[in-house]
Every structure is written in C-alpha cells, then in structure tokens.
Length: 226
Image (cartoon, rainbow, N blue to C red):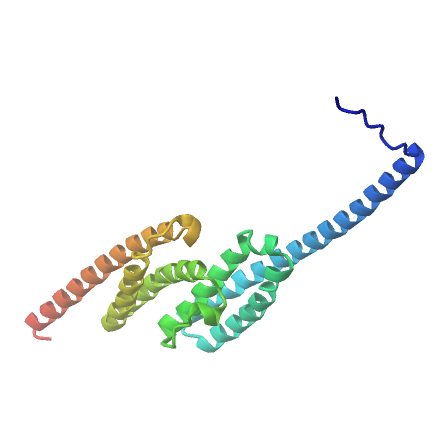
C-alpha cells in the first residue's frame, strides 16, 4: 500500500505575495527586453532603408559615369551596413528576419555594379561582409544593371563595350546556374537565376539585331560610295 503524503502547510498569504512579486519582476524584465527589441527594430528598419537608398543612388551614378559620386554613396552605405551587422550579436532574431539581408543584397549589387562597369576589382563576400546567398543574389541583380549598360552602349554605337557587358552577364549566369541547392539555403537564388536567364537572352538578341543593322548600314553607305 502507498502511504498518503501530507503536503507541507503553507501560509496562503505569503505564497500569494511571493507569486505576485515574481510576476511583477518577470513582467518588468520582459517589457524592458521587448522595448529594447522594438527600439532596435525601428532603428534597423530606418538604417536598412538608408542602405537601399544609397545603393540605388550609387548605381544611378555609375550609369552616368560619376564614379566619385558612386564611391561616396557606397562609403555611406558601407558605414551603415557595418553598424547593422552588430544586430547579429545583440539581436540575432532581428538580424535574420529578412529585411537586413534584403538591404545587404542591394548594397552588394551596387558594389558589384561599380566594379563591373567601372572596371575595378570585384569584391568578395568576405570583403563585403555578407553571406554567400546574399552575394550571389546581388550578383544576379547586377546582371540586370549590366543589361541597362549594354543598351546604353548600343545606343551610343559602342559595340565592343556592349559585347563586353554581354560576356559578363553570360559569366554570371554560368555561375548561378551551377548553384543547385534548396531555396532555403540560397535565399531564393533559383528565381534570380531564372530572371538572369531571361535578361541574358533578351540582351543577346538586342546585340545581335543591332550588330546586323550597323553592318547593313555600313554596307549601304559603301555601295552608295560614301
């Protein structure tokens, strides 16, 4: 037979008072933590929006050939990017929510566009302090800006520069198409790769058509004795 165990007698008033104190203490600590998280979140949202804005303006400056202005804007974006990276240690739940990585992708794209069009060394993921999925998605986005550059070169009649842009786009696609991992690992790189494929084929068609037109115009001028 099991013996009945008589519970220890407790002072109900003392027990309730202790629980009330514990609830207040836990609640105050929880509210303080949530306030800190919310403050950090609002700050991070504002900073990531700044990164995106600086990156977009830097890309526009590159297309205008204003490389000094692009470098200035990228330096500002880099400073904020460095500050936001601190969330990884202090508030990791905020760091990995997605909007930080989106801003990093825009920053990466701008830095790669500056290098690819401006003819400088291509920065690595380590140099940019971003993950490989962010870097590869940024590289894919940069291919779209290379198409814009290609079209600008075609309009100005610079076929060699347009061909160089197409070669870079082809190289980017050749890399991205070999990355065969789940989207959960690559942050949706498959979709970016599909977009690059379409951009590449349209750009190849534009370059081919323009080249034929220019050759035809040259032949007509030659036949007319120009």
